[in-house]
Length: 130
Figure (cartoon, one colour):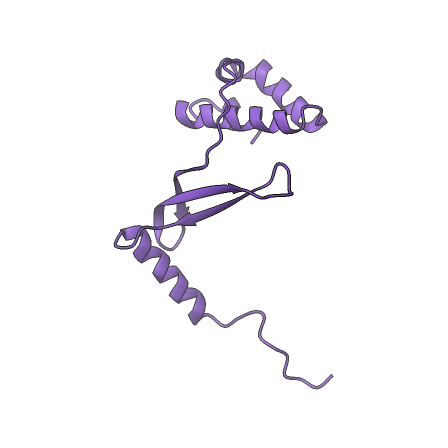
């Protein structure tokens, strides 16, 4: 997290903007968090791009959309997501990811599910006498 804006060419403007907005949202939840304040201060000093994005006050709730993941066995997966506020838990959200049926992502998720069921469980019951 700390190295993202400090490495030249490490992120696209879209990713950079999202990261700055996410940190601003975190700062809004707990503005006095010492670790976050230190991180923001360091990024403001060392990354002109971060400083520019931070000053925009671009904070949006991302309640739904698409996110791309890379899985070592099936490659890139672009999944839809839905984010929901959890009642009675300020600042916490539940995010559900899904693949649309009939897409390569759905097929990959089915393969991952099948592979998970074929491998022996690490939580199998003990059979030895205690």
